[in-house]
Structures are given as structure tokens and as C-alpha cells.
Length: 192
Image (cartoon, rainbow, N blue to C red):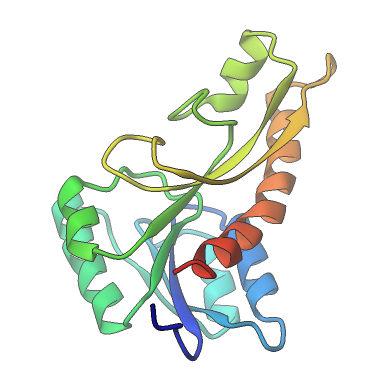
């Protein structure tokens, strides 16, 4: 296998505040990083996260989500035009179609706020508290055609305390997400 020379280019899909995006930008802005965020796309033109991309002079697009196919087609053109090696979903609140995953043909990673395979989908913190779980955490996984079911790249756990509520748990897990997502991307890209 030929080792990839030069920087590996990643694109990030977001939907909202962009805290994971901000953490990734900060991490990969380090000197001598072999990974560069070259593109940020949001399905929400008003997503706060787009401001971080603009501030860091990263190409960014807030595409109005009229339909899944329209959003995905526009995104695919941008991804291919920018010769992206890896797509990372960071708080992207839409499910990508099988057609998009096949057409993109490069790896896609996602960060999920639970210890998969437990609590796929949304409301993970609420479900963990409701079930009196003692532990939760975050998972970075490959995206495949089934929701939150791709091969796990990295996980980290955190304890759920009796005093925790949905907000406090979300805060704890988000801190872990910021810690493991860049590490997972480095780990994943070092193997391709």
C-alpha cells in the first residue's frame, strides 16, 4: 500500500452550535498536523458552527435543507470538487442515504453520545438516566447504511452520578467527545 503524502483533507457536516467542529479546528490547527479541515457544510444556513469555519478561513456552506436528495447532491459535488479524503459528522442531525454513502465512496465517521451499541439515535442521555445506567460516554464510529451501527473506532466512558440530570450528563459527554473525536480521526487516517 502506498502511504499518502501531503495533508489529508477532511470535511465536516454540522447542523447546529458546532462545538465539536470548534474543538477539531483547534486540534488540527496545530503546527505539523498532517490533517487539514478543508470544508464545512451545514444543512442549516443559520448554524452557529459556520461562524467558527469562517473565522478559521475554512470554506463553508450553509445549504438550505429543501429535500434530502437536493442537500446530498449539492454536498457530493462540493466534497468531490474539494478532493476530500474523509467526511466527519459532528452534530449533524440528518441521516445520510445509502445512495450518498455509496456515491461518496470514501470513509465517513460520526461521533455519537453513548457507548454504542447502546442507545442508537436520539435522546441518549434521557434514556441512560431513565434506565438508571451507571455509565455512559461517547463513540466514534464508521458510518454505514444502518443507524449508528458502523465499526467502532474509539470509545470513552464516563460515570453517571445520582445527582446528574440530562443537562449535566450532556455537558460531561460533550467534554469526552471533544477529547476523543480528533484522536479517533488521527487513528483512523493513520491506517488508510
